[in-house]
Length: 329
Image 1 (cartoon, rainbow, N blue to C red):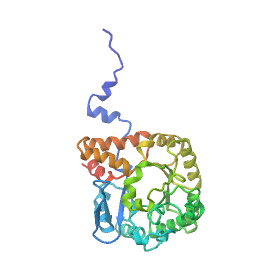
Image 2: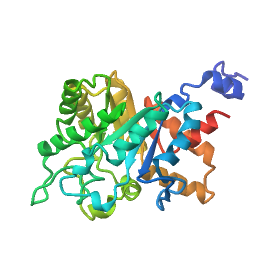
Image 3: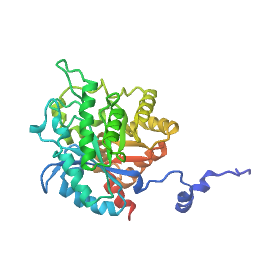
Image 4: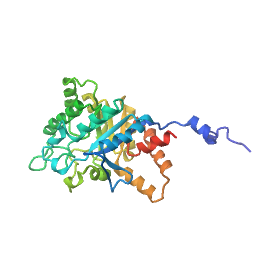
């Protein structure tokens, strides 16, 4: 009987050879932890739509960040939970030098100066209408007026000590204006992570509940500025524009439904490609885990490895704290 000389199973026969022949690995250096920040002291709140994730005041957050940083966490991404009384049509609280994010950045950097702090540059947590931009009486999103507000917000974050400002609004031209401001204000080392390919996705619902913007947004949508889920080539144009305007890193959001876009971006651009494993993706996976339909650790690790296989350099995931603990065992 003739047997094949090539047997691919030889490279799968033991854990040792599987380790040596694996094409992609997940390490702590691939992970960013996104967190929801509350004002006040010694406060936590559960998020009904995101089991296992909490809103936290800065002191509670710091207590969690210190051991995670010791185990390899390189960066945290802050998302504010703004009280309703601070929300206005013009989102002025977004650039308050004593605002929630500005205070939290200073607090974290005073104790963990080597931990990178990433701030979200977007107006939706601060607007009474829940949109990422300024609107006129007809409800139209005003691109250029919004950019002026985003520049003020980014400036306040950089002045507070943020290492990375991350415009996630999808207004045209905002990266260039933010970069120009940072250079003019001598924040030469402040990085820009641009949400370049942010899709008008159905997977953002739990996030909007977590930051408290869902009720403000109501039945309105963001289709006039976030990308059409039918389009992939358009994402390449968006990424190229943001890189040309001064983005240091680019984001594809959501993650798993857009692995094709991540792969395309990685093949064409020589900048770090990030992905956001968003709230809806987390909730679906964790829901199946909590029901006993999936085993948590292998399901989460396989999910995150998919990002690496697609070409992703950095993954922003609500599982980062758990995965870092697993990788340190």
